[in-house]
Image 1 (cartoon, helix red, strand yellow):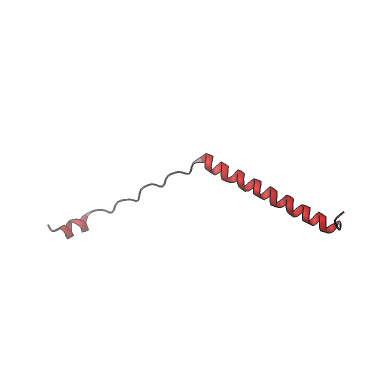
Image 2: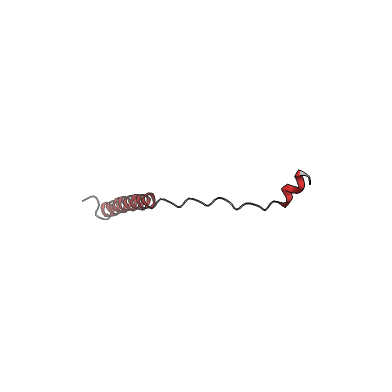
Length: 56
């Protein structure tokens, strides 16, 4: 049997399993997004308040 025939008869291998995400890293990402969201929200609130109260 030639090498080409042997290669054709081999079953394809399944891809390697993906590593599971680190729960601590996911937690850190969510925490960072929460902090950034809070800062942006607070800044937006301050700007709106400043504009509505004419800088008082």
